[in-house]
Length: 494
Image (cartoon, rainbow, N blue to C red; front, side, top):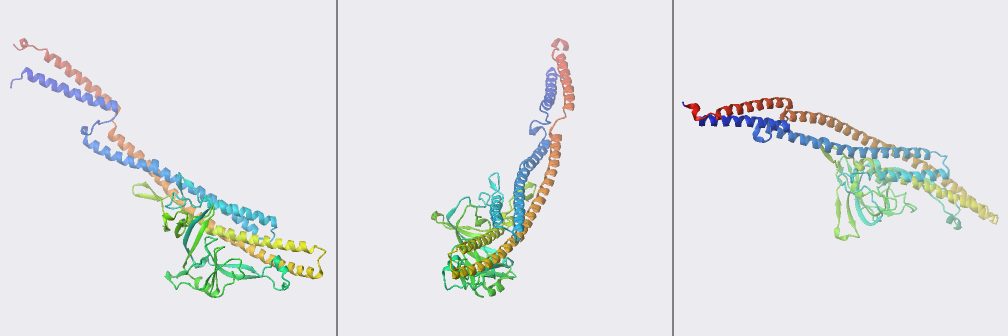
């Protein structure tokens, strides 16, 4: 076959272009550091790169955003729980001091003031937030645990679950005397104050609506029994028989938030697995706990009738979960209802009531002693005041006994609360350890993925440079050869 000049020229231009393309490709690899510049360069590398980049992007989201956010949330929670635990230790210490019989009036005042402040501090820790989200309120991260100000227009209808084991045996002093009793000349002060035992269900709140619960529902072995619906009597804690109900009666004390049970009612309820009691509370003080975080309840606001009735359903285990790895989630929150309960606050309230009762009786006794120092009194008046003084002395001793038992109960409750907090801290710690292990594993995976991505995409600079030098030499050689072919003339063929 005859090789024409045109064929040689075309072949020459094709070869020069191929060499130029090869050199250009190597130049792009060398300057960009990547094996390919466009998907068409190598579809296999492209597909592998897309998969690796997707995996790396997801892993980076977990490692650099989700896990740090989860750790910060858990660190804030742990710090708050540690503070609560420290406060409970102080409460326990004060209760131990108060349970002795050597307290002076100033000692009691000191303990009462400190317990009040510590109670407020515990619940304030429940308002801890992270990045604007409250950490102890379950799914309601935009709602604080406590009321931030006094509100007299809100009304909650609360359904509270109480196990039968939470029925308390309490002591109260009956037959107390006041200074006004002295003016009653028919009173010979012959009846000595006594301690009476009573059984009570202490509700989560005091200062309740005067309307008593319509029934007390209770369950045994998860089977609902015939509810108690009759003889639920509204009373005040200051009524003479408030803590002495009939055998089949229940005294509802709205001011203190108590149900005082008769002996037959107590016998029915003490073995109950659970009791459901509905009651209404209207008006809340600054620092009171919002019922919706603890109970099933409905809320109305008399200042905003247009919103109607709002229903809150308390769901157990309101876990806020973060996805920290492929198909792996971890719960980051702890619910206040599991660690910061109403029990410690109500127990401190009972202690403060007992302390105030002792202080009031001491004041009455001091006033009687002061009156006895009046030399103008007749012998009859002196004798009556001495009888009153003796009875007040007996009353004081009985109330001191009640106060010491209240402090002793404070020891038990604060210890129980510490156990709950320690359990929550241990659970939080175990989740934190899991999070650390996941973080370490993702850190290794991130390094491995970056290495694979680099091997798949990145060009070997040294190897590319050598190849580029070789391609450049070949290209220059092709240009040199072409120059010799193109310069041939027709005379060279003749």
